Length: 477
Image (cartoon, rainbow, N blue to C red; front, side, top):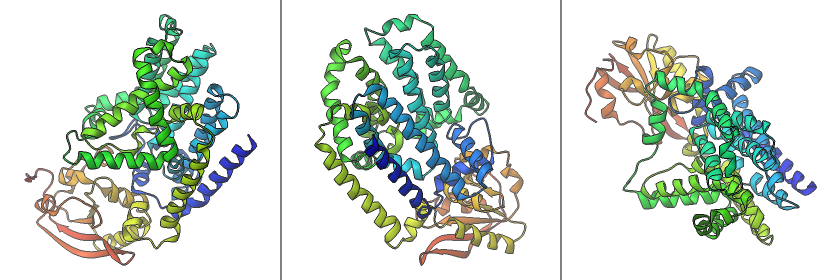
């Protein structure tokens, strides 16, 4: 216990010290935009990430520390919740092994340093599984209610939380020992409680043509992508990094060991193992199958790893601990070198959000020199979010040129009122941003008036756009 506690404390202190070297990433700026425009839900995510950032900004001010400290503190709670769950399932020193492997993973480090919906999802997913374990295996009926509350909050964090009630029903359906619980009201009370907490998300989507559900079910993946082999390789590599190699190999070993037994003889599988597998296997298999046909995001499997790591720790040969420490230390050393010690290129500064304040300052100066104009960016949410966080001006997003608006199109700002006005376009040069042929037709003229240099490289171009024609322009895609 003492050794594990020391490791966890030291690692979290180092993460806290590491925080200043990472700026407010574009994603974090976007979720801070949520906090600045509180709503029942949002275009591409449920509301809880915005609510938590709003709460921390109320306490610590509208600054980068508030956004990042929220992620750090919530992930710290997740680590404690994970230990509470592991302590229920594992005996002796195995629970400490699971805790150390979880806390040392790059997945937890990423959640600690970058605020995103996965941060709150990981906490409430862990608490949901912990409460369901208490309700099922220890017969404490009040934990059915707690589980419903936690599952509802998980769904208000991110839509993959729908896997929680699905995992519960899969476990009960295929468990000979606990199938009788399906005849009792408690599982349904738990799921109903979850649905009640999910009402804000459901209401917002009903009011907005269910745009979030359509986005997550259709637009987030691109089946039959021509780059499928490359996408699959990149996804596997990302999972090795966020899990660490020993855990990655251990999960696939576990998958091979138990898959056939589960399919053919689910009633002969240890009930506690079957319980953990029910919240791991369906999503694990599903995401890897999707990755064969198209691009998937590296973070889609994060909640499934919570029970997966506990299962690996139950069977892992202790001699593999040495390799876990060696490989983990090497990977962290590489990250520290490239983020802290190595000279940061304009690309690194762009991805880490270290260029945001300079960008906003220079754009504010250009805007002040051109009164009566409006400022906009069209590269999705990234540049518009960066500018919105550090600027007092209203920043318009891709809806100006009829592109998917992200949440910029859902905050009551009517871009139709801009017709006839002149605009200032901020266009990054470091990524595949919106091509000019989709922008130019919306204006009488577009000319470059300023360059923003980051680390000696022209990172952004600032353009003066005269005579905005409105959103009714027909542009050939």
